[in-house]
Image (cartoon, rainbow, N blue to C red):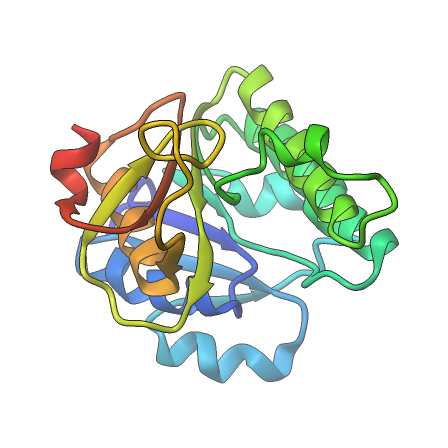
Length: 226
């Protein structure tokens, strides 16, 4: 396995990351999964990834760049989980933007961000006092920082995440999370379909410098995004 066939997943113990790692492994990639808690190492190893203990809330850009060095792609799939505005900003914005800069510093061009389907518009539609607003703001601003970078990014914007199985099929939504200008009848996206999307766009080099909002649907992913 050459060093260039390595993917670093930030948020390596998350549900999406644990589903994505074996899919990337099946495509011939080695996977380093960044985790905060060393007790999660066995779960990561069971998912065919190499656990790397590094707290992204505290890790500096140089530490991240050292881990990223020589990788083919970075996947940011971390999240604070909501509920605490300060930590939401620390993880979903500050850590994300440090990771973007660290990727640039280390020379890794490919960067996949897991966002959500309405990240571009919620920040303008929600009352700042709304409990969801800190998350919407953090994701919006992190996504924009990635768009403003020179990286070969892909921003994946799933809908409401579920534990359903992967179908490999999607309905493509627009920048506001709508389909043909209307709210979809169902805006669910299985976490395993997000994991499939991660492996597909990295493995096939799809959606370079693009944002893809999507829900579980009827069109095979590769057909939808080629």
